[in-house]
Length: 293
Image: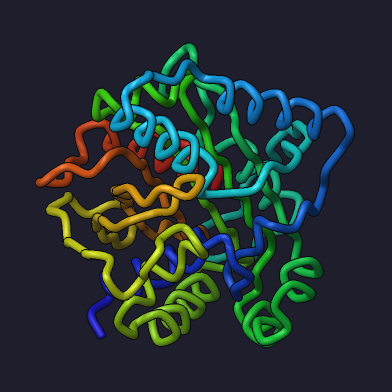
């Protein structure tokens, strides 16, 4: 199987919001605090309270925007701040402390997209939580030397207007750090085998799509990122509070040393997927990963 396919399949598994060897289940709140839960609740309430147009068509778009902004993760606590320790020489083993620092430094922040964006959810799972969520992943977690993973999902202040205007309603990053680059490549290969079946990439996003087998997966032309990468768009239908509407997710999945990453955006479906708004985010995450390795 081509290396590019290996990378995207494993990376999507990490962004899947399901328990997998390289990631975790965002439905589990591994590190929630009352303050963080309160912030997440306010964010969710603000999204739900967004101004709703009266016409039926725009009402459906309102539901779509709300569903899209909540489709990539459940609200969980931001990880605590940390100072990045000095990275080990290339080819050496990374520590859990270094992995945590990398995740904190490299993940997408709301202001990376726009000044009025906010964090919708921030999910971190250590190895014990990931293995508990999916016992079948325990062997790979141990073998590959998985250290930590983090999924951050950001959204605009007005998701309704964003959806109606064709601009992005969600921007997310999913990073998984391993103790070695060899371990990261190992789990990438396993992920490719696991998620190569028809509809598997769509299913990797959990219950986002109504019919994963009907999702159109379109390869997207994109320059190589890091040690190897792949870009693709997934276009299908989602259930937005009882109304079936369209959603398009465009992702760039890449491997950089001991870190696998997925950076993605979601918006109302377009005929031709675009990476114009995605590229600056990918470049920024890659730059941060490199600086913290």
